[in-house]
Amino acid sequence: MLLGNLKGEKGDRGDRGERGDKGDKGKDNDSNKIASVQLILHHPMMSASAPATNLSANTIGAVSDPNLRQFADLREVTKCRIHGRLGGSVSTSTKVRLQYHLGDDITVPTNDNGWKTLADSSGNHSVNTIFRSAEVAVPLAAKVQNCLVRAVLFSGDGQADPTITSCIVDFIP
Image 1 (cartoon, one colour):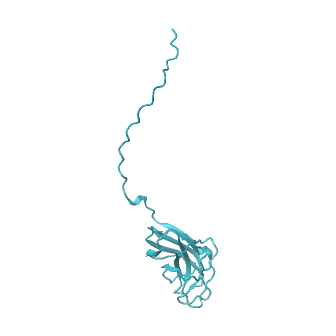
Image 2 (tube, rainbow, N blue to C red):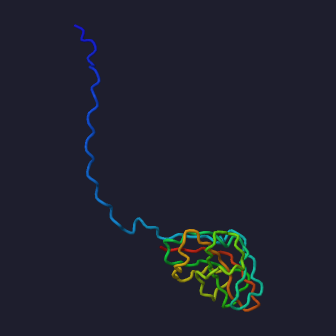
Image 3 (tube, rainbow, N blue to C red):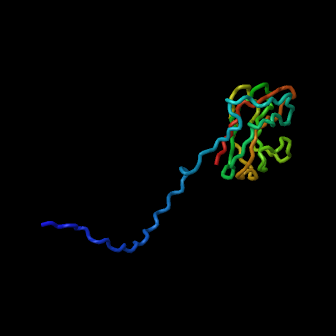
């Protein structure tokens, strides 16, 4: 005996079930947070910055280099630290200074009065020797999404001609 087609007609769709309970909230812990962010203002594989010829005491030099400025999101940052290396010739007072500007124009003039100090290295650097500065607090005014950051040379003895050969900044939440 032949049974033929055993498949019946398709039935109506059933009602949708109720939504399940909401799951437990995940733990708030430090594993979801970024440890730090590095901003490379001048990489050792690049050529050195322009020299700050005869850099005088308490003056800023070598700021025209476009490789030494970038935008950074500093909204969640609390501290920063400079890793750097200087070339040319330095005096004991020569430092790397990080500055910030709140304008949205990366081509803002070097001599614009809007540049403010973010951090300084300690000075007493040796030529071609990597240094690491202490962590310093990021000013509240700099904690914006599009903060323009630059590295400059600060202070000298009027005879030294320092250059920046490396500058990497750690921004720490």
